[in-house]
Length: 362
Image (cartoon, rainbow, N blue to C red; front, top):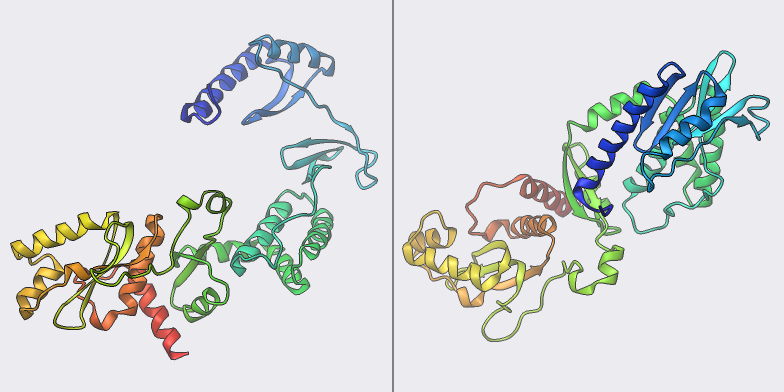
């Protein structure tokens, strides 16, 4: 079964569970400890000479299965000498006479390369990467001395990638206090988050304007390997070009569109993932039926004006539905004084209204 199949993980876990039960059943008296995480297992045997027997038993289940074994070795680093160590997942297990200690394990092949601080990512992305590694490394350490060594390693690594020394030192100090980390995590769960594309120099202004409002920006980078390698499916969130005579290119699909009134400056803003012609025809049917739930039909009924369906413009072309909804909310907020929309504002619209008011003030 291919690795990408939805059933692969479920079936693999089922097979390994069956093997676990068989091992415990056959070698139960010799197994002092047996713990499996996905396809990695940590075991302690009462008799180390039976290790090869257990391995042979595992490899007999199927010809496609090939289990390898790694045993504890004398520490190569002077830090742990003369104790035995064994890497398991992201942990370095240290066989100390007083009990097993843990340290954060770094593979020999791992480099100091990470996302550079000068890359076009939101500042909170850089902070999250740094804080995540500090938190993960500290959580693996059994002693304060180990945490200090990890702090030195992390500082050197992130300095090599252009991170300010003050940011690194502050992040390490914050993560040194687990209580403050817990309080911080509890607090952020009360905030409301909206997803927006990251635009350097603009997103920072909006984020600052929203400070204290309870609304946080979750920034995404619109430029990815996928968008660069497949231009036909790349995000196109710049205003589309109008054509003279006969309105906008109504054959577009996945758009944010604007329908003007012939007799006044009012305009209706909407979005659709379908062909724009299809959505215009739906509006036209609602107008003919005088459907009061339709904003265009209600405007005609209240004012006697005419709606210029032929003048419909595709303001933005965007395949991503989440970004398209944000663009719709943004367009409604920008044209708040002259929109015909009658639907109650959603969280995206409320956020954009606050952003635009704050931005206008500054």
